[in-house]
Length: 122
Image (cartoon, rainbow, N blue to C red; front, side):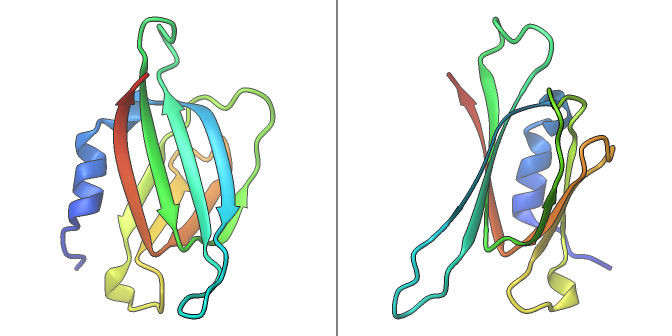
């Protein structure tokens, strides 16, 4: 059985299902140095579909050490609901979380080492 995970619990406490429109999707990689390898980082910004002019909140997610990234989108991406679950008990080297779109309306999936979630008001 999976242990509870503070990062996943915090993500869930932000009511992520409310933020169902993809506002921004960025992928970048870090520069390697002597002590570390190149790392893929994915940033996702989500907003509320209704009242977007009045609701200035954004759910900002940053994923570090991303592997096996799959993403396909056409036009406005709405109905977007991310699922993040801990896979620490699997003991996969360098991977602790599995991320995917719950509804599969926009195919998105990947694994990552760590993630951060923030609620930001513009």
